[in-house]
Length: 239
Image (tube, rainbow, N blue to C red):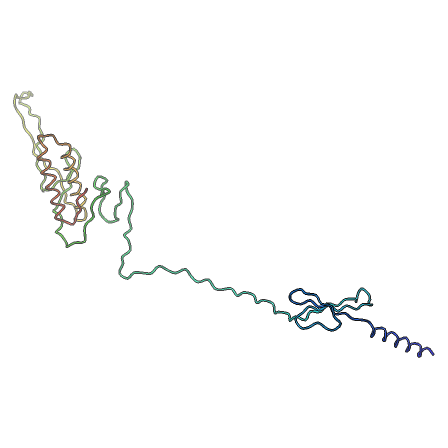
């Protein structure tokens, strides 16, 4: 008898499950909710609700929308190297320069004298036809150790006074004697002549500015002569 009762109970339970009312709650793309007794159309969100079921199995949420694939991770783009400035064929690099005593002086083998440095505003040699080189100029040293520039060689003679003593040890009246001496002079190299002639011109221009009425004409003539020497060469005339 027991198997018969067990089979009867199973049939009753199956019939109760089959007779459970099922409600389909549909939500479309515009969030409109529809409750119906048949499955939701494609593209809507479907919730299956069993009316007499226990709370744990009362609702089943089903989405009829196709699940989009996950977005692909962006690929890292290689950084392009910074563009190099275009090279101009035949264009020379700027000459390296150094600053000395607030004046800009090109590097070279010339011996620089602070009194002969180019001043701001000095004209630079032009790009015109080549001109003859400057005449020779000499660096001289006097008997007292002073140095000066001289245009001619030998340097002008200097008479150095000598003391005159008679046989008795006394100095005769109106007696005088001197020794003719010449300063030591050396010619400057050609790459040093421009600075030397420019300095000669500046000295002459200074003497002209402060000349007295009696020497103004001679000072102006000397300045003009030195300006002509510079103008006939590639050495700029200082301003």
